[in-house]
Every structure is written in C-alpha cells, then in structure tokens.
Length: 470
Image (cartoon, rainbow, N blue to C red):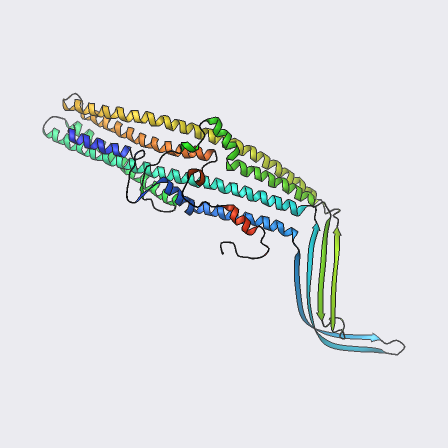
C-alpha cells in the first residue's frame, strides 16, 4: 500500500545502500582501504612492538661476535698499611725491629684473547644469524596479521554502515506503511489486525535498527584500535585476487615456499642445530692468550719497597676432563630440542596448507555468494513490487506486503555481507599463501627494512645508544 512515488524513492535509496561495497562513494574527506592499510602499517602498536623485538634479536649477532674480540680490564687500588717486622740478626744476639706506615697505590691492566674454544664462537655467531632471520620472518608474519586485521576492520565497518543505513530506510518504509494502514482503517478498508501487524513489524524494524547501530559502533571502535585513528568517509574496496595464484595447487605451492610461518620454523631448526654444536664445543680444549701489566707505588709487605713494576704474557691451555656430566646432559638436551624444532616445522607446514585450502574454499564460496545474493535481491524487488500492486486491488493483505518488504531487506543485507566477505576472503587467501605485504599490494609507503638496523649494530664494538638515538 505505498504509492508509486514513495515506492520508487524507497527502492532507490535502498539500492544506493546495497551498492556501497561495490560502487564508489566519493567524499572530500573520503578514506580508501589502501590508506587504512598504510595507517595500520605505520601506527599499529603490535607491529611496532614486533619491530622492536626484531631489533633486539639483531644484537645477538654482535654479542656472539664479541667472542672473537679481546677482553681488557683495568684495575686500580689505593690503601694505607701499617707494617711491623721483627727479624733475627745473624751472628748477633737479639733481633732487629722495623716499623712504618705505607700508602700503597696499584694500577694495572689485563688482556685476554681466546684463540680456540671448540668452535663455539663461530657456531654462536651462525646461531645468532639464524635467529635474526627467524625474527624477520616472524615480523613478516606480524605484518600479514596486522594488514589482514586492518582490511577486515575496514570492511566490517563499511558493511555495518551500509546495513545501518538499510535498516534506517526500512524503518522509514514501515512507518509510512503503518500510517497508510491507519488511514485505511479509518476509511474501513482494512481491519484492526492489519494495523497491529504493521505496528508489530515496525517495532521489529526498530529493534533491528538498534542492533545495526550497536554493531556499527562496535566496528568503529575495532577500526580505531587496529588502524590507530578514527575512520573517515569510507570508500568502496575491491578484491586483490590479481595478486593471488589462480589455482589451489599453485596457492599451496607458494604457501609452502613463501609463508613466513614455515620459513621462521626452518630458521628455528638451523638455530637448534647450531646449539647442538655449541654444546659439543664444551668438550674441546680451550686456548687463551693472557697478558698483564701492574705498577705499584709502595708495598703492602715491605716498608722499604717504594716501587714495583710487573709485566707478563703467556698462553693457557685448558682441557676439560670431567665436570660432573653437565656438558653431556646439555648436549642431549640440545639434540632433543632440535628434534622438537623439526616437528614444529612439520606442524607449521600442515597448518599453512590447511589455512591456504580453507582460504581458497572461502574465496570461491564468496564469489558464488555474490551471484546468488544478487539474484535474490532482484527477485525480492520484483516480488515486492508485484505484491504491492496486488494489494492495491485487494488481492494481497498488509501482512503480505510486510513480508515481502522484510524479504527484500534481508536479501539486501545478505548482499552487503557477501560483498564484504568477497573482499576479506581475497585478503585472507593472500595472507594464507604468505604474500600479504606492502610491497605486493603496492602501498605508497616507505617499507620498514630490518636489514638496515642489522648492519648498523652487527660490527659495533662500543656504544650504548641505539641507532635511532635512544
């Protein structure tokens, strides 16, 4: 029972809402999905924390390299001593007594250089480098997670904004339907039952509107948490299928070779293998070169000694024979850890394969869902127009019109959700194969390069300030 003009206006308004996710919604202060991804890449605290963890891991290489370098120690002491000496005098009766007070000052330096330690320094360096590579892959995995969360938050907010507008338009339609039902009741064309049905459907529509408003507020808060700032006027987003493999087989092949979870697990295996060699190095002899210089003014043992200078240099060989069995237990423990890391690698491969398969299936389902929901919307629009025309000539009731209206609203909400799922599924597949990165997406941003910090600190011999000035 809506007049033709109102029916057209409501239908056009709802159609605009349904096209939010596929058509362009321009604004002077609009924000694209690419811009949101850039903001999350720059501002997300989880990602920045992982970058800091990667920089901290870089220092392990410098720590390991310190085993090749000499160790120098300087010492100094100042003391006041009182000496008293009673000595027997040869060929004479009695004894000679000397007493006095000395100020003793001692300065010295000691240097130690390891010449051989069972190759432990070299293995520690290679282990630290493997840890650095693993940390970089973990960082890349964090980047993928943050970018996927950002794309999901963006599309959730876009979907909920569209559904909120759709429910608002539905409430307006139901209010007009109720007014017309009351007018027709006064004219004797319908019964009180028709008015009650319209009132009930309007109350339900308002409840759905409040739910949609709650969902929108929640998505807005999640958007701000992930992106790091309030949303602007969101624009339409498109899938990123062009960056993903075309077949499931190709997707699994890329995921098996490029996914950061797998590569990080591979580097963890390398680090564990080097730990076994480090533990075995404890069974080897150790050769060190030692030198020391000491200058003393005064003496703590002889009141007549005014100055003393000592210098020495030598090599020391230390051969471990038995230290209670600790080194053997450490070797066995390292071998078990190596076996665990290899199993972790198998687990990572299985998980990545499963996730890639699921992501591929979800993307295919999302594509099919778009087609089915679009057909559903078209059919629901035709149905609603037909029911309204039939109701005008008395062949349909108010309840029939309300049901047709609700079916159209549900169909349009399903289409909006399907459009959201289509975009998110494309990003999910790209993440599942290990290719969701600013470089692949072509984001206009300066990419964070962990290699820069690594070279800044790798060969640093001294200094407590980090390269960024902290």
